[in-house]
Length: 468
Image 1 (cartoon, rainbow, N blue to C red):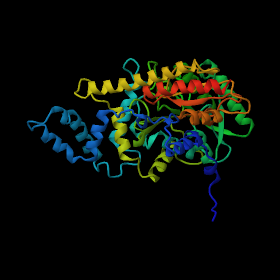
Image 2 (tube, helix red, strand yellow; image 1 turned 180 degrees about the vertical axis):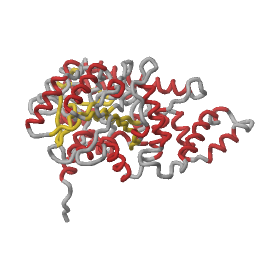
Image 3 (cartoon, rainbow, N blue to C red; image 1 turned 60 degrees about the vertical axis):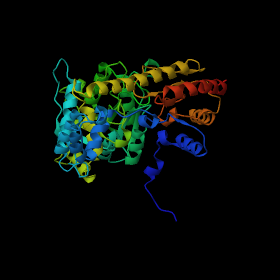
Image 4 (tube, one colour; image 1 turned 90 degrees about the vertical axis):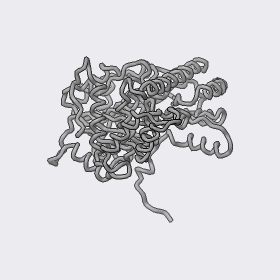
């Protein structure tokens, strides 16, 4: 039996879970040890959850335990370490009261109001300059999502109505975007940050890509910017962000700002698109997620999308917010545990409260370990012939350029051979897109340092044998 299906879904590609990771799974089934550096999945590689987050979530799942824990606090003989702190109990109680139907009921389609208010308050704190917020965030323009990926899909489903509707994406890019554009039947419009200058983004590059798209009959509707970058780790400064805003304003484009790595800047400053935008009338859709940062709660699928300057819709007395709400309503609501996790992400424990010191220690330890492991891998590149890695460390990935691959081989061949020889599972650069004539790979710097110390010498030996 054969059935006709949507060919766009069949033709979608998503390299981070593609042929190389699938081969790694086969090797694992045969008893081989592999190291999954193909995807930003921190807790799968041993990163521990933030204690405060999990203590509160466990009480939300079983709210009857809140009263029990309060009773235990008055029982002699129960050690303090076996008791839940009163501050944590208070946070859980307040969240239960505001959830109304608990975690088991549907919320509003946009997400619970108090969580959206917390998101807006977080955005205002993040973007304040000298205590002043350029333009306050509006909780009515915040949508809770099942991770940032769902927000991307909502947007592209609305924007793309036919094969000549285009979306500009950076190359290399996170393949969610190319896959989503393919699924929606639109046109992918590539633009190329300058790798040799640390993935710098220049206005001339954007103009050239837009002109090329127009020449082939594509109507570009939006530009995607991933900051910090995935897979490159590039961190955009205020000037580069301003260039993108100027470009979008001149050409009437929406900006989709993927900012899920905003905590992964390792000493650099993160500047949001919303802060730079200020009160300019340019459509901006900003995305954030609980999956990355120092929390790494990928499986809980929490996130939000904030909308500024929603444009009206041609042919309808509606704007983009109206259709986003309709699209969210069809899905009923985002999962409630993910919403609760997002609330905790944007509502850290109060400074000086009993959980504060532990929270800060856990947060800083995760971020310091990530930077240390990235530095260790970059140092190993210096021992590999023809390997260069540009720009500063950001996000959770390194994207080295591979020169001198044997004639007739590709970076896919290299990554597959690397897996077979060393057990290290990476993703070929072509899975993210790259300038013609170049080869890369992406590696997530998430495994424990001890594991990296063991595999890096094998990688160096493999590489120098492979390219000679």
